Every structure is written in C-alpha cells, then in structure tokens.
Length: 314
Image (cartoon, helix red, strand yellow):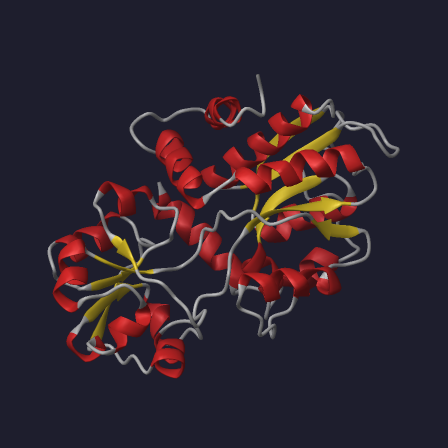
C-alpha cells in the first residue's frame, strides 16, 4: 500500500515550518479545487462535501464519513484525491469542501511548527486553539497511522522486546532501516536518545517509506529494527512486532475529521463521532490491504463493506 502513500503523508508533517500554514491562510488565489462543488447548497444544514488527500487511506476514510452521514440522513458526497494538506486544508477553509479526514499530530505540526505536544490527549486538546476561526475538529478515533519501531518476532523473542524501553538495553547492537532524515528528525535518533537513551548501532537509509525494500531488509536480518507506519498491512502479514512507545517519542496521529463550521449540524457531528468511536488501527490495516493490495478494491466499495460490517449501514 504505502510506498508512495507513506511518503506523501510523511512529507506533510515537516512542511509547517516553511510554507504550510502560510499557504493555507493565504487570501489570494481562490479555491484550490479545479472546480467548486455543486453538491452543497449554502446555508446551515445543507448537503456536505467530504474531501480527501491524495492517498488511498484518506480516500477510504472520506468515503466512510460520507456513507455514515448519508445513513444518518445527512446528504453527503465525496470529492476525493484533492491533494496535499496545503490544498485540502484551504479547501475546507474556503468552503470548497465541508470536511476532510486528517491526522491529529501532523495537523498540529502544520498549524504550529513549534508545538511540543506529543500524547494523543495533549495533541487533541491543543488543536482547537491553533485552528483558524471557522474551522474545527471532531472526536479522534482510536485509529492511528503513525511512525513505529518495528522488529521481527524472532528479534523480539531474542531480546525480550515489547517496548522501546526494552530496546534501549540492546540498541547499540542493532541497525535500523528508515529514511535518511530519521538520523536528524526530532523523533528519530535525537528523540530516541533523549527519551530512551537508545543509541542505535547505525542507520541503513531507505526511501520507500517503510515499503517492500525496508520490509525485506528487516526480514533478512540485514537490519534488526525498521520505521514502518502502523497501518501498513505488511506488519500483520509478516507477524511483525510494533514496539510500545510509552514516552511518546512519536507524536500521536489519530484520525479525525477537520471541518468547516458553516454547515456542520449536530446530526452530522454525531454521525461522524460515531465513526470515530468504532474505527481502529486494525480496521485501517484491513482497508488499506483491500484497496492497495491484490484486491485493488474501489475505496467507495471498501468503505461500504466496512460501514455494513459495523452496522452503520443496514
């Protein structure tokens, strides 16, 4: 699933220091979409347009949001694959779309490059005060798509590893697979040293964002640890072990709706919050496998199956 997908979303978190929020709040240039939505009449309580970023996981979540809204009696359509956060954020802000799925930690970093909050609770609490007037976020899901330190089952058993704290005891003997930037990023080598006193033997850089090259290096024991996103199907498919991160070295990345307040009704909020109560990381793994694995299922069809399975749609 994730070779191009992970790279797309990973890049968004680091852009805030440069052009992220400036672009989003820019008053010039009009709508970021090629054409304005014709499905959402003005005025509170009208139909809603759900946008998505330009990678499959976001598209599936957008279809889930739209399906849940329609099931609750709120007319909703989707406008998928809008682009990066710079683009869909501005689209939500100017009303070209009414909401889009986002990730709590990266959204906070986009709004404030200097934000220090890392835990799920603290990140979510910080968001409302950073959002521009007229925008809001709804309840976060348990589902997260975030960086993780991943090892094989054999490595976990050999060193008795369940968490990064356990890993710290043997870090000096282990080599890691990750993007080259992991060596200098705050959550990379610097964060591991500061939070866990973990100083790895070395880094083997891979640019596939935790994809197949990274996976093969891990499975062949060319490296013993890898940075792989938590919703990557290969974790389950290869019985890999995701190490717990009790000190929150990696910023929380809970899935949540980013929305424009203009047309968001209590009924719509309730429908979306109900999705967040149910959606899990395991669900995202399964959905990613369905859409980007061998099945190549349409995001709308994958979302429809999930909604039916969870009893949201009869």
